[in-house]
Amino acid sequence: MKLIIGLGNPGSKYNGSRHNIGFDAIDEILTRHQLEMTEQKFRSDYTIWHRNGERVLLMKPFTFMNLSGEALLPTMSYYGIDIDDILVIHDDLDLDPGRVRFRKKGSSGGQNGVKSIIDMLGTNEFKRAKIGIGRPQGGWKVVDHVLARFTAEDRILVDEAVDQTVDAIEAWLDGKDFQHVMSEYNK
Image 1 (tube, rainbow, N blue to C red):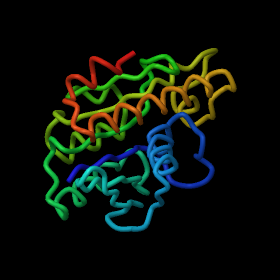
Image 2 (image 1 turned 60 degrees about the vertical axis):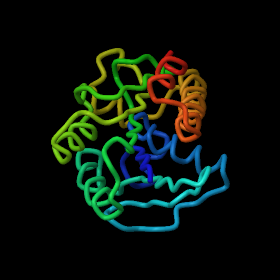
Image 3 (image 1 turned 45 degrees about the horizontal axis):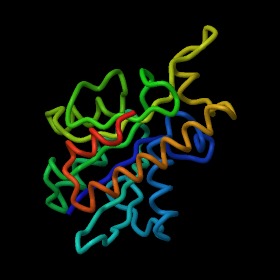
Image 4 (image 1 turned 180 degrees about the horizontal axis):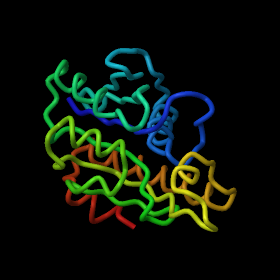
């Protein structure tokens, strides 16, 4: 079983915000495959998707971003999911809008949801899909930037990045080695 967790903040006031790009990617998977979230457990909404004979748990925590690990760890434990089989989708300030980076491990890069997961798992060695949201401009504070919505121009770039991210996830789920996914889809 694989687990794909999109990071974001719960509540309609955060819909479409930069920080919720992980939720946007999960929503794109749900839309493409005519799925819906069917369960609420372990402080998250989730569904189990059957793809090519494998079960894939798609997850959106309803903890706030900074507590994402508190939803992930019990879910992994309950379903017996190995750390090699998880993928975390999150926003990245250091990537321009529209850029995507897949990684097998690394620091949190200041992303508090990823920091929470690292703290709860006790390791930084897990797969990630990082979607660029860019740095704040014009004196904005980081917190205001990540909680704001994208400009119309950036939204177009980010929607393309979400599509690319989901394409890459599908390739991984279809058996492509994650190293090859990184080589092919990092842009």
